[in-house]
Structures are given as C-alpha cells and as structure tokens.
Amino acid sequence: MITITHHKFLADKLKVTSWEVIEPYFTQLLTRELHSKAELELWLKHRSELEAFLSEDLAWRYVKMTCDTNNKTLEEAYLFFVSEIEPKISPLNDALNRKLAACTFLPELDQQKYFIYLRGLKKEIEIFREDNVPLMAKIATEAQKYGSILGSMSVEMEGNELTLQQAANYLKNPNRALREEAFKKINEKRMQHADELDALFDELIQLRHQVALNAGFENFRDYMFAAMGRFDYTPQDCFGFHEAIQNQVIPLVKQFHAERKSKLGHDLKPWDMEVDVDNKPALEPFTSGSDLLVKTIKCFGKVDDYFAWCIKTMDEMNRLDLESRKGKAPGGYNYPMAETNVPFIFMNAASSTRDVETMVHEGGHAVHSFLSKDLELAAFKNCPSEVAELASMSMELISYDGQDEFYPNPEDYNRAKEEHLEGIIKILPWIATIDKFQHWIYSNPTHTREDRKAYWVQLSKDFGTGMVNWEGYEHFQAYTWQKQLHLFEVPFYYIEYGMAQLGALSVWRNYLTNKSLAIEQYKNALALGYTKTIGEIYETAGIKFDFSENYIKNLMQFVGEELEKCK
Image 1 (cartoon, one colour):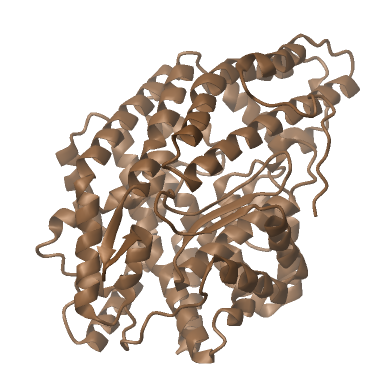
Image 2 (cartoon, helix red, strand yellow; image 1 turned 120 degrees about the horizontal axis):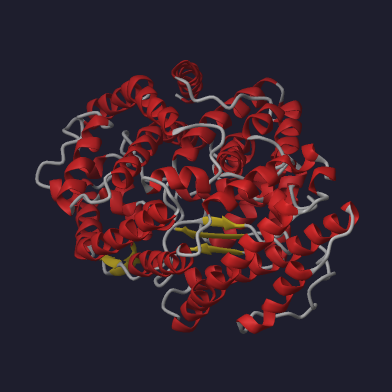
C-alpha cells in the first residue's frame, strides 16, 4: 500500500467547496518574499503541493462523472471546477510563473535539473492571455458533452440492450447476418446524433480558433504546438509522417485486406473487417471485470514483479472501474493522481481481445505513474504524450510474455498476438488520417460541415486500401471521424500514438534480444518523468525518437517477420 504524504503547505483536510477556500494559498505564494536559493526551492515545493492537490481534486471529479454520466450531481461537481475554479486559477498561475521568471535567485537553481520545467514555463508565459480564461472554461464545459452524448447510446441485439462497445463484439461474430445487423444498428444510432455532434464540433472549432487569435497565432494548430510544448518536431515533420505511412504502411494493410477477402471468399463490407477469417468465434479472454483484473496481475507478474505490484496496489485502493455499462462514458483512460501518485484506470471491458490490449495499455500508463512518483515537483511528472504513450504501448508488447494467462491455448495465444500486431500496422493509417484531418480543420476554421465531410471522405480514400466496399453506407463512412474522442476532448493529441508506437516496437525488439536489459532501460526511462527532452528519454529506453520513412520501413519489416512466427 502507498503511504499518503501529509501536506506541508496546505491544510490536511482541505476540500474545494469554494474559491475562497483555496485563494489564500495562491495569495501566500504570490506575496511571499524570497531571499535565497533555498527559499526559492521551498517556494517551488509549496507551489507544487498546491498544483498536485488541485489536479487530483479535478481528476476525481472527472473520474466520477465519466463512471456515471446519468448522475447530474457528479456532472455539476465537475462543471463547478472547470467553470468556477479553473478560470480563477489561470491568471494566478500566470502571475506565479512571472514571479518565478523574475526571481533573482533563478540562475542559482540547477539548470540541468530545471531545464525542461523552465523551458515550458517560459512558453506558458508567452502564450497566456487573460481573454482566453473564460474561453477555456467554455471549451471544457462544451467538450464534456461528447461523453454524455456517447454514454447515452445503446442498441438492442438478440433481445438485449447493449452499449455500443458491447454491441461491437458482434462485429467479430462468424454469423455474417448478425455482423451486418450490429453494424447497421450501431451506425444508425450514431447517425441519430450526427447533427448534434457536428454542431458541438462547430462550436469547439470556433472557440479554439478564437483562443489562438487572442494569443497571437494564425490558427489553433500553431497555438497547440506551443501549448503542448512540441519543442522536438514541427507540423512539417507531421506531414512527413503522414507521407511515410502512405508509402510504407498502407501497402501492408492492402496485403492484409487481400488475404482477408480471399479467405472469406466474398467482397469486403465494413462489417467483415473484424471477424476471424477462418470463421472462428471471437476469443473471450476473460469473463468479467474481476477476472480481467486477476489475469492482468498474473500477466504482469510474469514480465516483472513490480508491474504486478502496481496493479495490485490500485486494486487495494479502489482505483479501477473496468466493465462496460449503460450510462458510463465511452473509451478508456489512465488518470494520473498527482498527489497520492496512485492513478485510476477507467475502461469499458466487454470480454474481447481489444479489452486485454486496453487493460495492458492503461496498465503501462499506471506503471509510469508509479515509477515517476518520487520526483520532487508535480511538474516533473507531467510527461508529454510522446513519452506517456511510449510507456503504455511498450507494455502492450512486452506483456506478451504473460498473456498466456488470457490465452492458455497456444493456438488462441498466437491468434490474439497476430490480431494485435496486425492491429498495430492497421492503426497507423488511422492515426495519420486523424492527425491530417486536424491540421486541415484548424488551418481552415471557416469551413462548412459539407467541406468537412468531403475532406474526411477524401482522407478515407487517401489512407484506405480501396478494398472495403462502403456502397450504400457512404453516409456512415462520412461520419466515422465522430467516433474519435480526441477530436472533441483533446485536440491534436493523437499523432503521438503513432510516434510512440514506433518507439514501442523498438523497445520490444530490444526486449526480444535481451529481456532484463530492455526492462531496466524501460523503467529507467519512465522514472525520468519529464526531466529530460523526449529524445533523451527515448535514448534512456535504448531507442531513438525517430519517425522518418526509413525508420518506419525498418520497423514494418520487423513486425512482418514477427507476424510470420504467429502463423
């Protein structure tokens, strides 16, 4: 069990019931005189304690709301924080940043230790605008509506009311008529809300564009590159990534589709893409959320005892909500808890192989939280997505060594592994599509819904294989982008999955050569939090931060070789 550290600066039983409760702590930090390097470092620790407390308070509000989207009290508690508390924090955070930047003892700090922190702080000062505070609150309030809309959706299959996640399991059913029925019902349900989601997205685009203009940027894309601290690559690098995926990955996906079409013996329709090509029923690797948990702990234990301990600790502290149910928000996440340092895993498990992938993925994020928990400041643990996703995606691959807990039959194990590796290759074009879509959306903020639909359809062709027949269902395809939560809730957070996936494949390649060294490097890299550059963290993991065409080509060849071993 983790020992909860008592506050040194804040009152121990502090609760955010109003702004007046926490305002004095900001005032104290702002007015405190600093007479030495030691006093500055203590000030930084006190500020970190306040930031960690507020971050975890918001985290719990979000977690509780997503676990039960029908509970208006929980929704109001979350909205209270984002509309009443956060807008008041923003200008004070800017004032604290400026106080730190102007401190005469700043040059005396260990510049290597604080380099990443101070680099980010300077960028925050550059882009902060008071006018954006109410806009950010509005964006947060609007974005949460996406989860409520999706969480309300359900369909009936074989007499049972199912969430869309549960109904999606039918897309793996050998009975083609059932697959088609599930596909139509899921997408018809989505179409009932398409206009509502379009309207929500229109509003978010305009709000975000105004934020960018206020901060002196031409568009929201350029603003987000600054806000997300993308110091290590540019939009042009992203365009290069998109092109490399088209050249090196799509031909492989085309091969998969050709094999699928040949084995199934008929044209590929959208409901034929997940079923086993030998018409075997979908694998059921676990029976319930508790079974998933038990097997995950055993799986992780076969790779590294520490990994298993992390998940056990989360279970003991009630930091898991795994099963899908009506009224629960869609998706899955690992939410770091900045104060207690024990994160929360949320997902919608429905006994599928994809759920195992999600669990070990979020488990990788959780392990990252534990490994970086002893870093001195909360800001040191605040990793960019390129690093956070390296933790999770590497875990998906290195945990193969324990996944016989889910698939004790060797044939099932190889089938699941093959499905996962193929999935890694297939997801890369989707990642490129979503990222390119976002670049276009925010570079063309005055586009119409028809423009958006047309551009999405074009991208679907550019990053597709031309082998899936959508005839008669083009209206569904034109709105498939609405499935992507990131577009609504966390814009521009998606290409990192592709970059980190390449890094994860490299970690796994190292693991297959020398397991103990690869695990040691993986842990050492994650323990750095965000105290080094992305490139340095990847280097500590024994890999390169690289998404060039040659690197992608090399890794696709490696995955192809590993896929052959599964057959």
